Image (tube, rainbow, N blue to C red):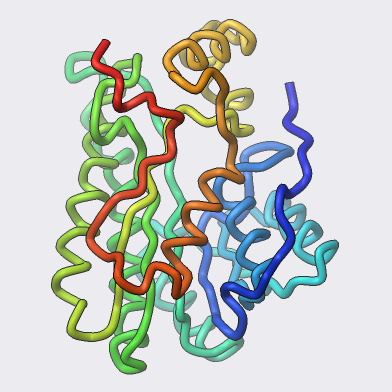
Length: 276
């Protein structure tokens, strides 16, 4: 099953004149992954997007969608778990588009397994992929923001970082909880530098990752079964998609959130508020 959706909103210039780095700007499959949706949405709102991804093919589709909407996006291929590559990426952004006003960290993914089942190697891979990548990009980009005296960092976590969401995935849960704690500390530390830092916490979205990865991990490849199980947990009765995550990230990145820092914006249709 493929998500084939168009962007839900046209731009009104909420990021006009700003440079925005979006990591994970591609998608694991056709449709609106969180990173792709954010890159397109930011460009619609006037940002010059430095679109970072490790896969060139999936990034190309993002660039096409940005171009269709008259936006600006510059591609950059980078593995954000590689410290030297991330430093080069940050420098390339400054040289190409200017000092970034916005950094959206969107790289991440889950692997199944509890504390007994998960290997130590996979545990470390999950921490590197979901948490260390966020640390490395912030470490590389923040010095430019500090010098400029401005910036907005938006990190992407998950409801799995704040509660049980139906599957044992201890590496993912721990790393996404770490993103939240990391971002809170970052926000307080760099508030005097004019930098805000917040976390988007998506719930069980219907993104391409459901078809490409999760269905095989949790439902024997039965996509419809997995979708029904996930939707049943959501009080609103439907699943969001990458565009909902992007809308939340857009608010936190924009000047509308000028007094918002060190907090989390949960986007999950009410799932994490349930007590059952």
